[in-house]
Amino acid sequence: MRAIIQRVLAAEVTVHAKQISKIGSGLLTFLGVQKGDTEEKADKLIKKIVELRIFSDEMGKMNLSLLDKKAEHLIVSQFTLAADCSSGRRPSFITAEEPQKAKYLYERSIEISRGFGIPTFGGEFQADMKVSLQNDGPVTFILEL
Image 1 (cartoon, one colour):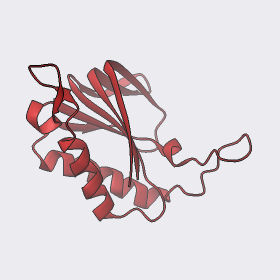
Image 2 (cartoon, rainbow, N blue to C red):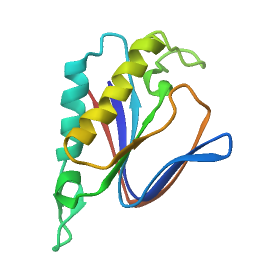
Image 3 (cartoon, rainbow, N blue to C red):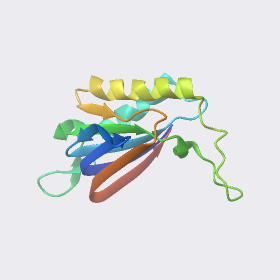
Image 4 (tube, rainbow, N blue to C red):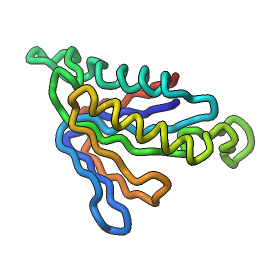
């Protein structure tokens, strides 16, 4: 699994010009599911994301997690994170998980985050989504399991 996480002041997802998800301060996670990814990997990755200390404390140090801040989480499925761009000029998607399993692990990731008591929202799997965000920092991390 690959994830790009961004600390945001706000983020939203629209599909066909209709807003389907919106958060205020928190994290926007773009999630890519690859062949061989498992429920255990999803559990571990989401736990890492919600516990990662990337929010500023009262001294301005990155010392607080999403859990500590009681902030919101938006998780968006992003197939292109499974791309291999190491050769040629066209990305290869042979490492991407087949849609049915990828959707299951994506939806499970949302439920895992909610299980931590985090208000968590999602995009629409396999849709042409428009994602808007107001980055905070900017603070962006890439995680891979």
